Image (cartoon, rainbow, N blue to C red):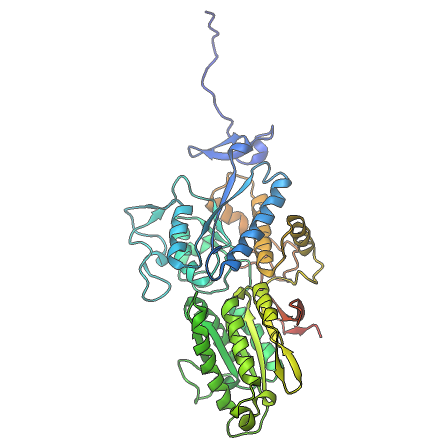
Length: 493
């Protein structure tokens, strides 16, 4: 056997700092803690998602998942992230907090540590009365996803986000506008792992109050909150109260100090709890009409989901036009002007479909559709009329997929487009901490989400814009107003 001096049978992978150091179609990734050149097929980017595709609110998770998949498929067809394939690791949480927490632990492969947690939200629950996430720190396991994308819902988020950020994993583009954890300081330094794309519920509420004022809502007695009895509903209500103060002014001394705006609350995942709340709201509206002959403009902000929302609107409209004894004494058909405004999370398309299916109600001036004066404050442009590149791409992909378009899947698509832009901008090995720094430098991508779009080290919310859309009798959506942080509301008509 011939031996050659200087030869070695040990393979030494090429060291690198960024992808372009590799050449030959290879990419730079960590292996055993060292950055080395590897084939992109051996370095897929696995992203996690937990959302409901079963249960009462399955349309919300189905829509977000669809939007993410559209963006992943589109980018993979273009070569992925310099050859790396995007993969989605999905878990169904049925819009149930306990299942969402379990899914988060699996997605980040959470391992218990003996050291103290690094995030305050791990030991101090965001919602009073809930159990702590963990009494010790949690670390990312070897099977952890790079990021968790498109989480659906506030009550689920308050249990899943603490798990994700405690392990040092990115929590990106959640389908909720809640301030708790996502937009406040409860997570302390761990908030660096949180990136929001959409406007907040507080911003939606501010836009809604400006709209109500334009429609003649004059005081707190003429504002109603219909909301889910949990952290989601509370987020909407808190935003409504703050929005009232900013738009109308301080509450009078006669207002309830705890609940200055009257509210009617239904139970999550239980639409059977709605009729009792509708009855209570009808009694309240009747009290506004008693003892006077004035016309009353009432703004009803709905922090809800589509099933409960459609039922509440149906109940109130049916009562308003019922030919009963109150009609003769209160003339509620003519003296009540009700303006329903749902937050974006409602599932706009599912709400529209249900209201259209309900048909119309007989009024003194003829039949009136249940869609009448029903709005949704959207956090993405109207896919039915907007002409921006991102909307054109979304509509093209939806048509190719052969499925129905919708605002929820559009939000999933846009959020993922922003996330992918961060992946494309990142040059070194993909780790959550490294990607955080790249995302913080992501500028406005010209997606038509408003002039103030973009991330920075001090700002982890990409968009600050709200589009008010009114539901037409045929179920389509018409642009009514546009609002952006720091700018007055602008009407399209």
